[in-house]
Image (cartoon, rainbow, N blue to C red; front, side):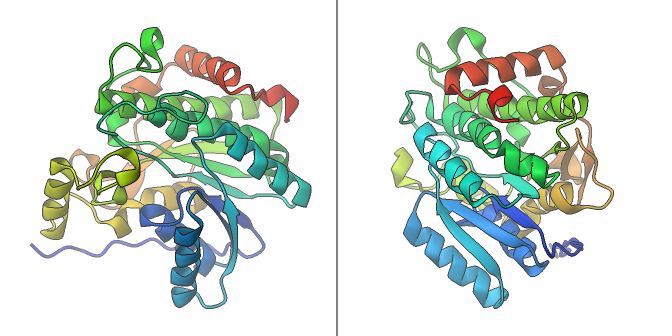
Length: 315
C-alpha cells in the first residue's frame, strides 16, 4: 500500500524559546528538529547526556544553524525537576512553548520513581506537573502555550484513586492509561485556571495515534529487553501503510497543537484517520475520561500534595 506523506507548515518561531521533554529520540526529536528549523531556540532537557549530545548532532545535520540548549532532567526525580526549574528561572528568559512529550510505557513489572511513585504515574504525569509549576514564572512571561502529549490509551479507563500508586495490583497498561488520563486532566485544568486567574498561559492536548515509536521498543532500563509483541505488530502495520502512523506523522498533532495559528486552548489534537490511529492531524472530541472538571480539580490538588509543589507559590 502506498503511503501518503503527511506534513504540516510551521509558522516562524523566530525569537521564541521552546522546551521539549523527551527530545533525545523519537517524536520528541522530530518536534525539536521542526521547531529549530522554524527558528525557535530549543531547549532539550534529557536524562541521558550521551543521547542528548547525539540528538543535538542529529538536529544540526538537518538544521546547521539550530539554536539549541542541552539540560539535565530526569522526570522520575522531583529533585531533578526542581533543579532544572531553578536553573532556568535563574537564567530568567521567557519560555514561549512547552511540550510535555516524554513518557514511559508499560514496564513489565511495577517500578517506582526516586520519590516512590509508580513509574508511569511519576514520570508521565507528576514529573510534568512539577515541571510546569516550577517554570510558571517563565511561562507567564512568555505567554506560553503548553501542549501535553496524552495517548489513545486515555480513551478509556480512569484515575484509580483507591490504588493510585498500584501498590495493591499492577497492570502495565492500566497504569499507563491512568498516567495519561491524569496528564490530560491536568492540562485541561491548567487552561481553566489560567483563564480564570489571568496567568496568560494557554494549554491544550495532543496524542500521536499509534506508530512505531520508542515507547514499545526494547527498553532495558525499565526491564524490557526486547520490543513488545504489540510493538512488533505496530511496526509491521506501519511499514505497510495499514491504518497506523509513522514516527514522522505521529508528532504532527503535537506540532499543530503547539504552533498552529488556529489551534485552540482546551482542545485535543490527534490523527484524523480511521479510529484516530493515523492520518493528518486535526482537532478531536475529548475522550470521555478527560471531560470531568471535578476529576481534573482532584488531580490538580492531589498532584500538588504528592509533589509538594504548589502553583500558588509559583504564579
